[in-house]
Image (cartoon, rainbow over all chains, first blue to last red; front, side, top):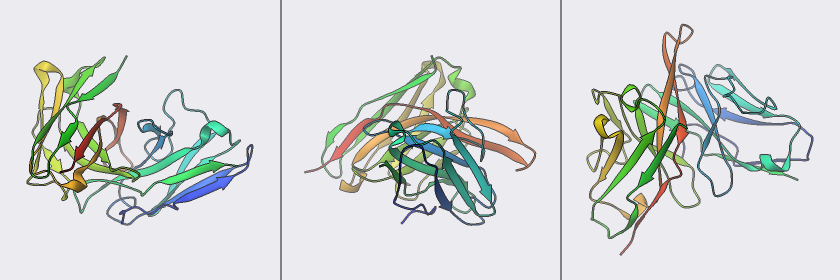
Length: 110
Length: 127
């Protein structure tokens, strides 16, 4: 059971928009920044969104992040087949004194 | 190019030990906090341990506390993970990741994220 809660899977058609939610608590998302990582099949994780809503250089602006209270969301617009991957949210947890990850969400582009 | 490369994984029996290494290049290693994150087969990511740039502060996940030791050698641009008393459920791919950070007035402190990640090294604990 992960400290941060994500839906196990989401799916949407190419060209559409999808959102992935990440729910936590006051000791993690409620008090710390949220980061998102993308893991393509068979590959290492890669930073996708950092500091709640910032895009690293080289990441498509089809990806966006947001945060409100103890929840965060990742949105992907103009879905493409290459977006099929596992997506993880993460945040520092003040109570656990460590980083906590969501369980991951598998995105399928239909 | 900024990169980190793990090595040292392999097959070990329950109760055994293994030492992972992570070689950093393309950045001033001694200026950055570093981390280990693992992923069991078919499962999600699990943070394992973190160490600050001068080794002043070290943090462990409860699941590995007392069994694993994170360390670094700034002169060698290397990060290590000594794993003792290994269990079957320690099996997985172990990733090394650099911490990047930025001061945030909104959060009244530093915000941190993991970037880059290495390609991972597989640890299999089995009899």
